Length: 178
Image (cartoon, rainbow, N blue to C red; front, side, top):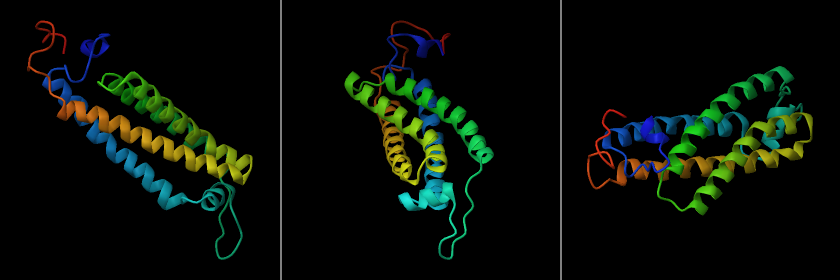
């Protein structure tokens, strides 16, 4: 952890074992995002109408869907806010340690944060505001998905593809710091 805490830390310059640990995290987090997307597509749907019906309920046609209760939304928001916050923090730290430009980093991190925040807020707005807020859910999902893919791919490239010129830690032997 001390390696990561240095201001000049870069994934490319990190010792191979550290790059492999970070890379393994990125590989393991991928299925989490895929299952989240599966839930959103399979359970909720990807149209504004389907999103509105999922949160607001409906008695139209053959489908009878009950509106989400305050308690249900509170439970999901509670769990997601903690997990999504921690995952964003870790992915953002890894992404900041890449060789991507500062402008690209700022855009990706801002977009991912806004998408994640929108993902947390949209269910409440759709359920207790108006069905039209379902468009926010779709936009948030798109921003969040795009951002998370970029965070994982760019960081993963530097973990697995961007190799340091040596297997030794940069600037002297710091094997006791790893």
